[in-house]
Amino acid sequence: QKEVEQNSGPLSVPEGAIASLNCTYSDRVSQSFFWYRQYSGKSPELIMSIYSNGDKEDGRFTAQLNKASQYVSLLIRDSQPSDSATYLCAVTGSGGSNYKLTFGKGTLLTVNP
Amino acid sequence: DVKVTQSSRYLVKRTGEKVFLECVQDMDHENMFWYRQDPGLGLRLIYFSYDVKMKEKGDIPEGYSVSREKKERFSLILESASTNQTSMYLCASSLLAGGPQNEQFFGPGTRLTVL
Image (cartoon, rainbow over all chains, first blue to last red; front, side, top):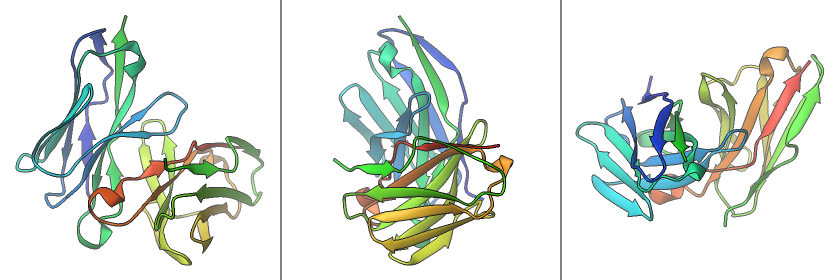
């Protein structure tokens, strides 16, 4: 059973701080990794995707991937109250099921003004 | 922008009713998915379709069926609704398998209550 693990939180940070969200996955041959943001009562929204080892930056967001450690993270710089949401990590399957995503249960982030 | 729409935001049905949830995407995506999301259980895949008239069971297909007669439309059917099917139902689509094309985009969700 492929698994994606996230700390459930809540993770609480002050406004302007860096929020660090972590995710580990069990399928060693997973190829694609995604971070979704989900506001309460809304559907998940894709915010970052990463496919190769290292860092990928997009505005205030940085995704980091370490395939050897089976670890992917999301850093949010200069956190804002509007970043308060649940963040879902998602990982593709391997081989013939590489269009399926396995989701973690999410980390609830609260940014305090 | 990819747009995925779902027929209802909120739906209330009675036990034993047949329920249809409709999903439409406007970006010519090959793959479409139905998930349900419950507190503490996360997102769970019910069914997915990788082509018209093609479908494959996900992790929790029991009590559900699907239909994909046109590329842009994917329907989820609850043959006889039960109270344990009360949930948030999310439809998603992705362009292709592999690489950036398997990013999934979600519709707004349907919150279904079965009484």
